[in-house]
Amino acid sequence: MAEPLKQRWRLVLGRYADDLNANLSAQQQGQDQVLQTLYQQGLVERGFDLSAGLESGEPQIIQWLEQAEKLFPRSVNDKLQQDAVDHYGLTGVLKQPGVLDKITPSVDLLKHLMKLNAHHNPALRDQVERIIRAVVEQLLRKLMPVFSHSLTGRLNRQAHSPIKRLANLDWQTTIRKNLKNFDGERLRYERVYFNSRQQTSLPWRVILCIDQSGSMAESMIYSAVIAGILTRLPTVRLSLVVFDTRVVDLSEHADDPVTVMLRTQLGGGTLIGQAWQYCEQLVSEPKRTVVATVSDFCEGGPQQGMIGQAARMIDSGINMLGMTAMTSDSTPFYDSQSTSQLQQLGMDISALSPDQFADWLARAMGFRK
Image: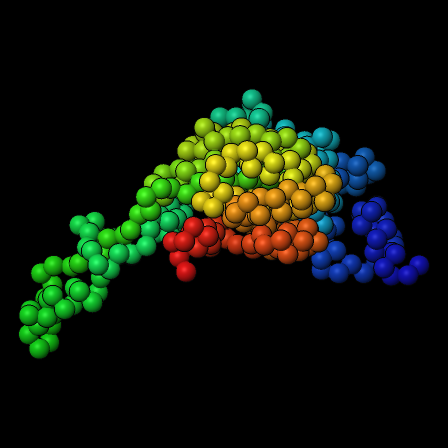
C-alpha cells in the first residue's frame, strides 16, 4: 500500500490501525491526537486503554478546540465540533461546575463558546455572560482610544483646546511660547498647548453589516465591540445589522456589546445580497453613508443578485467597505471570486485588524488622508 494511502487510513481508523506502520508527518500526528481525544470512546470499546478526553472536564478543552481549528480545514473542523457537541460530551463538560470558572476569559474562549451557541444554553448563560463582559471590557480598553483618536475630527492647528490629549499636543507652539524660560540647558514649560479638533456639522451614517454565519464567531465579537464604541462618538450615527439567511436589525442594542452577543445566533447560511438590500433601505444621504460589511463573502444566494445589489448601492454614492473574516492566527479567509468582482465595482475590501479598521473607516469618512 502506498504511503499516502496508509497515512489516510491510519487517520481514519485511529490507533486501531497501528499495524499499518504509517509514517505520519508532524501535522498528521497533531491531527491524530485531536481525533483520538474526540473519538477515543470508540477506541475504548475496542479494548484500548486510553486516558480521559473531552469528558474529563479539564480546561484543556480549549486547547483541543484551538488545535482542531489550526490543523484541519474549516469544513472538517465544523464537523469535529458538531460531533463534540452531539455525541462526545463537549456541552456536558461545559455544564460541569467550575469548568468555565477555571478558564481565563479571552477572545479565543468566547469565540468557541459562541460557535457552540453556549450563550443560548440556559444552564450556561450566567457563566457565558460573565465571560462576555470580561472580554468586552478588555477590548474596550484596547480599542476605545484608537477609534476615538481616528474618528473625532481633523486637528485644527488654528485653534487650541483646554482638553489635554497627547494626540492633540501642539509641540511647535508649546516650545515657541516657552522659549523665554530656556536657561541654556533646560526649557521650563509654563503652559502646554493642545490643538482643538474640527467636528463635522452633520454626523456620518455608518451601517455595520455583520455576517453571523457559523465561521464568523471571532469577527462577530470584535464587530459588537466596535459597534459599541461607534455609538459613543459624535461624528457617527450607527446602525447595526447582522445576517445569515435572515436579517436582524440590532441597532437599538448597539451601545451594549454584551446584549448584541447574547442575541447572536451563529450558524446557517449567508445571504449577503439580501442583507445589503435591507441596509439600502436605511440610507437617506448616500454620499454621507458608509456600509461596512464584515464577512467571508461566500454568498449562499445567486451571485449576480449580490453583485447587482452592490452595484446599485455604489452607483447611488454609498461608500461600500468590506472587511474579510480572519482565523485566530490572523489569516484572512474569503471567497476570492466574490471579492474580486466587488472590488471591480469600486467596493474597498481589505483584511484588517480591528485597530486598523478604525483608520480605514476614518479615511472613508474624510477624517484621515
